[in-house]
Image 1 (cartoon, rainbow, N blue to C red):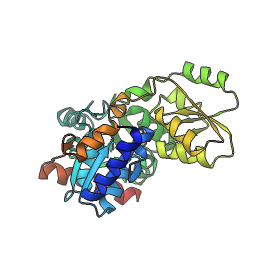
Image 2 (tube, one colour):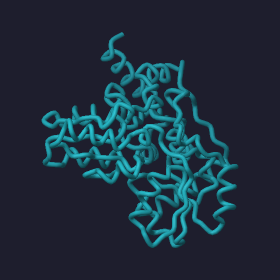
Image 3 (cartoon, helix red, strand yellow):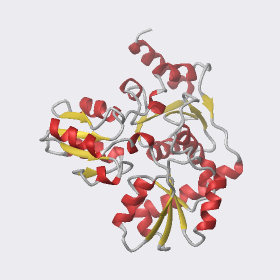
Image 4 (cartoon, one colour):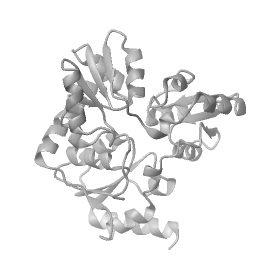
Length: 305
């Protein structure tokens, strides 16, 4: 079968089975073309909750499928490729977090959405990269324990100097691998390009950026900007997507290391096999996790809108 033939089969099967397909922006273009919704992890889950479809296939990583299940407990949710995990989400478990909470007993625990649903049950509120500053600013407590990504946490802390932050030493292995030398090399090769960076990158890299924001924020900035060239400091598939969206502009990867193999493990055939009943994994969460993680996520919606 060709890519086009597989795509046509997927489009037909999802219609017949009343299933919507969610694709994170880090997926390949061939997957985005069969998706009903494309975006970041939280945005996809919100779209799933709004959908009238009985089933949802998540083309992303496990914590995203779990978030989708928390927001859509009555829907059947599948993770297209069961091996698609997130190293950052797996860096901290509930037992370790309980120890941290004992060390910082009077701190509000803020979890990046890139965490497991089980871990969210131990947290007060979760945030996305685009909502973190706003939500942390609205928390009444002036002491915040931010987990698991210290780079995003420090970026937020810099915007809120009146609050005290404590961090866990985790982070995204892909974004943290980018160095100041990568920035210098990219700028020397493309001196007229704007540098757009995700706040999961190291502070010294973020400090060099012309724009700092979430994946969707980076894409929106590049699409709306009058500039013609951009260095993209987030997962490298965004370079490809922006090339399709803005063929009159030039996009360059900040570093080869910004390629997430956990995202790339999902293929078009994974979706095909999931719809055919030969692949994927149905996400099952206990009532306790659904309730605990749901409380954490609802608090995010309340504070962040």
